[in-house]
Image (cartoon, rainbow, N blue to C red; front, top):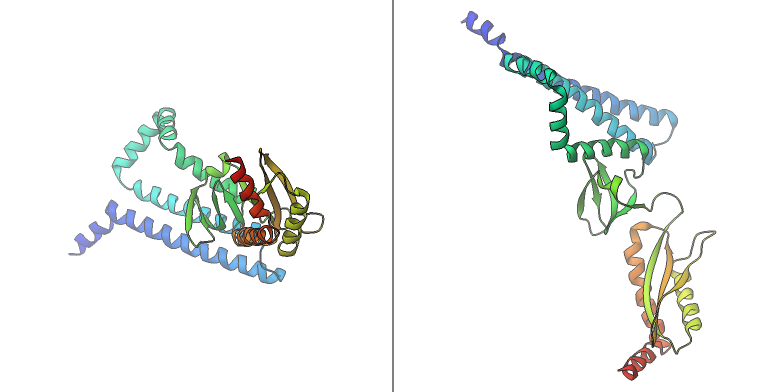
Length: 274
């Protein structure tokens, strides 16, 4: 019985499992001490890390864990003669194998590289309010290959990290205080457009006062035979309330234009044109 036990402990499977378990435990222990180190530094400095530092800390901890686990799995695989032979063949044809793997894994590798670049170049950080295409939300988590965004309606959107390198990303939490909200509306060309603009700007200044050095504004977007398409540019101090502010501004503009008779004039102009 003892000989059987000794033989089992000397098998490749047993050694491989031991290496994987050691790697897993080492990764968890190292991550624990790195987390304690981050907390100790924050306590020593007397302040919590900023978004940029927090994002880097999280990615560094994940990279360290991944490296330890990869080393452990590699050592476990090398306990089997098959993988030792295979490794020699791979090294002999490394160029061909690397090319094939590179083509097959282009998207995952691109996402992985982009994830590391995002962490250290900081175009977006944990907690930032951003927009990617038609998606608006708060950066909740940045992983190796994907970034998770929490939208205002509490949906979780998963975006490949490569998208951040190939598309325009708006970060409303960096740069100027607040973010711009655009509201479109139409008035009759025969009416007093200047008075309408002044009334709409008054509404915007009350509900969305611009930060110092900035101002709300109105631009002419389109000029038709009977109507003028205008766009209000107003400032939202908190990017998270952009949609609510835009809705509030639209409702206030409708009430003001209706009270001033502008909406009625628009309908009359439209009927006359027909």
